[in-house]
Length: 571
Image (cartoon, rainbow, N blue to C red):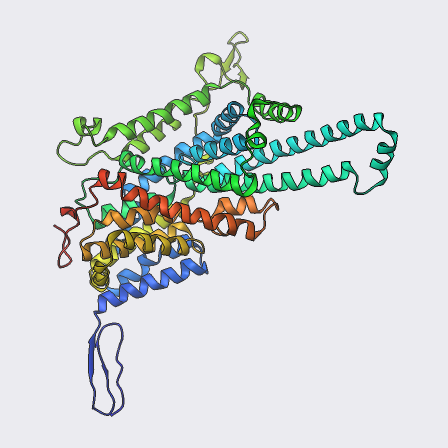
């Protein structure tokens, strides 16, 4: 008899050799269909044969037609609480960018830090990481790189003039030396020029890499700093609805901020070693200030002067921003009842971080950009009979919808929704449970080994795929694996989420890398050499955090009751 292979989407598959051997394999229809949808979307996301956001809409088509979920149940996944938190956070970032508040903060800090190479790099990295915690890493990098280029250019030009003056002074005392300087291609002036070009070539590479790397690192510190963080929160709430809001702004910051600081310091040391060495006198200046430092400092001071004094709009945006952060931290701090628990959440989780984000961002559309007592820049002639008086036009709000519409990355909202739809489909079809059982043999590996291996896998995958797509694909699988082997889901989901943002090795890995590469100062191998070590540093730092203060914060050594999923049902 010939071999028989039937429908792989769910019927009996019979394989044999002339009746001597028969193997019966049953593949669940629903699970296989959902697996097909996930593989198809993963292929589309990796190859980008369609826009990422369009690929994220495929569950709306595939899940109802395959009988996995009803259309209404799929569509509701695309605008959940995590999406509202994302929108609110982006509205704050757009307001900050719209009024140039981020540039004022950056220049102010750099003026305090100074222009010595090592201090300048640490200043740029600190400012970039801080801004990236609140606004997009792409916008942060696009703003900081030109400032770094201008400062380094001024330092190089000033040093060139100083070398020429020094040689001219020496030439006056020695006429033969002066003639030799003009004629010999290997003259002291030419040697100094080559040394200076090599020095500033390395310094420019190091400074450019420090900006793009710190932008990626800084985004990991806050829940709204980068999209993968919000995907984790959304997946946790979707897969484990009874988790007790274990991931919120305050708890995420408590774990991720110390981790970010450690990664930033180690990254600074590595880049300092690669491109500047550890010559304390040259790198830190040891308190000396030469003419070049003063002129480079003047460049930053002039840029800051062009911004003028802080306007009412900037002050209003800064106030709302600070209030938002304070409300996020105090909503549910963990060590004491927060204001939301006392006022609104006695009978349930009515007020979330998303509620706070939307409430505060709505104020941007209400508060005027100028106080009414200052009048308006646009004044119109009063109507006849008003004795020549002028009527004032009401000032515009801090934000208008035209600005929001242009700068809001609507595609990311669909990407978030597509990830939530995949997670929901995996649960509804039973694919998550099947994957969990298949990965059960991993129970024999120590937990720290599992976390380390998965971080290496995700860190490698994210170099050639977007961090959003990476976390969307991996997190539901990791959740299933953790529940199957009795491991706290956050023990693997949290470090892998942060690792998805550590794309340091390739220009195409993340937009900040592409921005600094576009300036033409870097080669691919420069990024690979620096980025490989930073990837290792990041993975080891994250695993250190998850096994120390992360364990204490989230009780990761015990399997939580809310993660106990049996027979496809949630407790």
